Length: 336
Image (cartoon, rainbow, N blue to C red; front, side):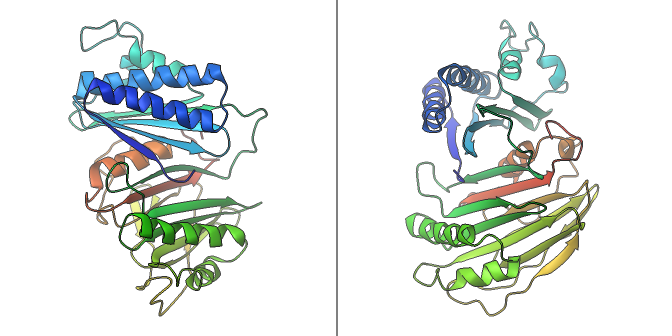
């Protein structure tokens, strides 16, 4: 499942909705009952914390691969100066027993948290029931893909293909939003996944004809090749790609046009890729002039946390939004 499920949490009834949505997703990939129980507890505690400490927030859910469920709990509340202290049982800033956040941290296989006083908190929990250890991917990816309005079809879509020594990412934004935009983005994903060994430029060109019967789409393909220390990129339309290296950022070049309709030029660019590089791809539902230099410690967190912060603080609020954040699995960091 490429797209995410987003539930706004503004009252206790929404906590129940988030729990039921998470359970349905877990059951759709046949997670065992014991793990489903942990997921229900985690989502309930996370949603309750959103109401208790921030007043409201969002729960974002997605399925990863065959048997993994991810939950993000996101708010713009008062935040925490010392998140690690808040994870200890018995600590509470709201006069409660102080066991909620500590319980959340123990139940999932992967847990991470980022919080800033005055800006809010993001909590990540991933639950997996793989029968045997999966091969470690070369890229750790965080992804959020949500529609403009909850419950509507999302006109964005994305796909990831792992090769022996490289990883390819596609992000497609169907023109407009709603069902017809979703159809265009889905056609792009289907074409990309049928022939995953093409170069980024060849992939973009191959999607032009299949998308002629749709609204068309803006899209980009990025190929990360860590062995050769490069990232290859080809984009048409308003998909933004940025490489982060420490304090420096480098924007990647996309050409104007709409795949499936007006595509005057396709070109592939190559950029340096280092072990500590981070890739950010996003649709135009996110402001293009975002900056993360005011978020100390964020780049050391899990890519899903970074994607959630970008979505929370830089979404335009008038279009579907997709944010993909990837970094090398060999890089030191939480759960990487």
